[in-house]
Image (cartoon, rainbow, N blue to C red; front, side):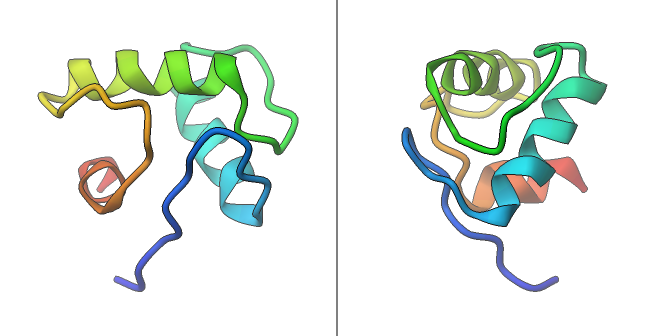
Amino acid sequence: MASKPRLTLGSSVPAVKEWERVLQLARLIDIGDGSYGKDDVAATRQWQELHGLDPSGVVDEATWEAVG
């Protein structure tokens, strides 16, 4: 699998929309705007906790790998 970019507060790369779709499917956010903001960080922490990951709020390699 090609590596995905690390997403942190303020990121606005195309992968943010992809990650927001993951959060939408998990029903952790309603809609995404393509910018990795405070709501995305909070939802990511919840998603990471649900998947046994460190709830850092940063979408890192381990987080992308857990998506499958």
